[in-house]
Image (tube, rainbow, N blue to C red):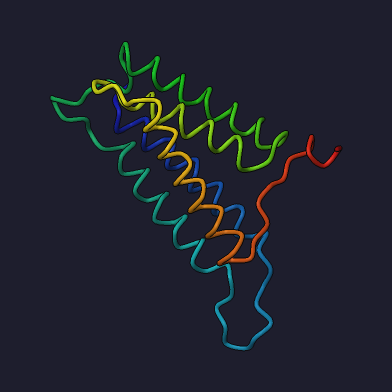
Length: 152
């Protein structure tokens, strides 16, 4: 199956999920207000339309398969890292798993150029710090602390 068709199918699935989730949003209490459902639903409709176009469109002659060889290994490794990140975030909260995930992904994406480990660590610390400051201090939102830390 070609890359466009796979991306189209995934986009249709995500668009359908977003459309279904918009029905769970509450209605607006203000008269004349469109409410919180409109913009997510418009986004879902655009995703469904674009995904459907990718699915039904005839592939070009130079269309490439979705994943081949090394790409498939790298894709599965990234999925594994993300699953590990989700599990670690549940257990240890935001900071430690985010640092680990960013270091691992930075080293993985330095495909042809070897990224020095110290540089990956510096990037991870800076990005994690920026995300933490933006959510905790600027937006006043709590980031996950972790279930293991809650037990202590």
